[in-house]
Amino acid sequence: MPSSRRDFVRSVLGAAAGMSVRGVARAESARRPNILFVIADDWGQDHAGAYGCGWIKTPSFDRVAREGVRFTHAFTSNPKCSPSRASILTGRNSWQLQEAVNHYSIFPSEFPVYPALLEKAGYFVGLTGKGWGPGDFRSTGFTHNPAGREFQTRKLQPPYKGISPNDYAGNFADFLAQRPQDAPFCFWLGTHEPHRAYEQGSGERAGRNPAEVVLPKYYPNHQVIRSDLLDYALEVEWVDRHLGLALRTLEQAGELDNTLIVVTSDHGMPFPRVKGQIYEHGFHIPLAVRWGAQVKAGRVVDDFINFRDLAPTFLEAAGLKPAPTITGKSFLDVLKSGAAGIVDASRDVMLVGKERHDLGRPNDWGYPVRGIRTREFFYVRNHEPGRWPAGNPETGYRNCDPGPTKDVLLSGFDEYYRLSFGKRPAEELYHVASDPDCVKNLAADLKFAAIKRELRQRMDALLHEDGDPRALGHAGFFDTIQYTGPRRHAYDTWLRHQAP
Image 1: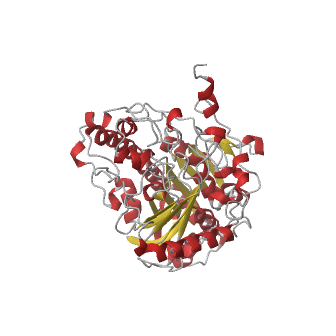
Image 2 (image 1 turned 90 degrees about the vertical axis):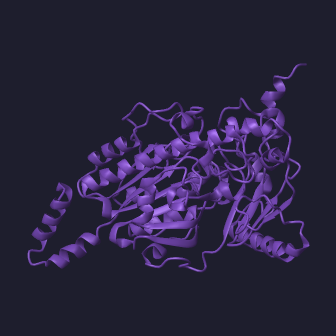
Image 3 (image 1 turned 90 degrees about the horizontal axis):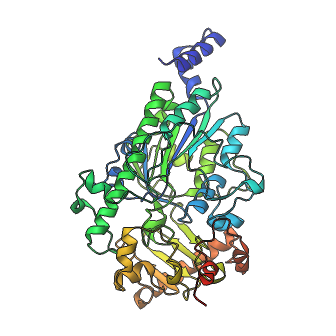
């Protein structure tokens, strides 16, 4: 028995000499759980073995799913790093976050974050890798990243260019070594992978077969794209490797089964029509949860889980009430239910949306979108269809990370280019149950007119309940939010570099 666990049992026995073995077990189970939150940067929902993917190997994630619960319908309300992570930390939907609705903005101080609430309640809290960001949190009063105090000392030699030298698992071990005796912990392990850039061709050089890659329907069957996806696969597997090392560290410390382990990603892969775009593969994310005997293992749950539901779940698991600002709903009851399939029938809808992500349009304009996802359909309202959804062509379509796949799609103005970069109609409707790639827009089909109207009305009603400024007629607020990042790709920067 590891020393920390042995010391705990001895203290219980010393405090109650006549306690039975069963009583000791009850006392141990009553301990406040540790929380390990593992979040990848730009990892798509269907790119794990537990979700049926054969060309990306994720044995550690698969283990968490096998020994815990795998969720099939987990979503972020905004598929970009900063707003997605802000939703996790605050328990609020993206449009409820004031400036934090946008990428590269400030982090408002009005909304308590769950790591700080847990720390106030006696948890030892830390972070390694990527927490909230990119953006500015210091000007609003935070002394460290909202996700926790940083543990970034340990470094390693990465196997490929583009992979961070951060030794995530090693820094987690250092964090545990500094934990006060008997204090529960909350740790955010945020990898920088599989965010671009990649070492081009690394997947093929590692012996991976491009023919095994499963392409979405919005990409052509192109060798460069297949190779690019293999490079992405190597970085997903790097994330999984560190997850496995973190699990081993918990086992060695005797803390594995008293730790609520949540593994996910902030949004979909950094490829055209995915990251930063309001389509299924952008906001549908992987999610697996393990918690020892507290959770019946091997279950697959189909309830809709919103990223804003994570904060209240962590707080409830720690025996705390959610902050009044939290609008998400704890799914601890779903985790502990022992049931599979649809556990809570009321969890059947998801709202998504965005305002401005990256620069590249006149006046720093964004591309405002709202959408509603049900079990069968996905309805989208593009509020400014005259704008370019991925950014203006002359500034380089900046709301799409550069890479070989982007280059291929921009080399020919065909249907594949249109799907990723072309202008979009005001309304889109997809039958995601049969068209998860969202390539067949049914919005103009009269057979679906009633469904479209019903979804639009339901979305508007829910956004009103959420206090969305755009739904309440105050959309002008979103154009006042300052971009805190570099302006080298801004439209005004591009204009200054044009010949007179």
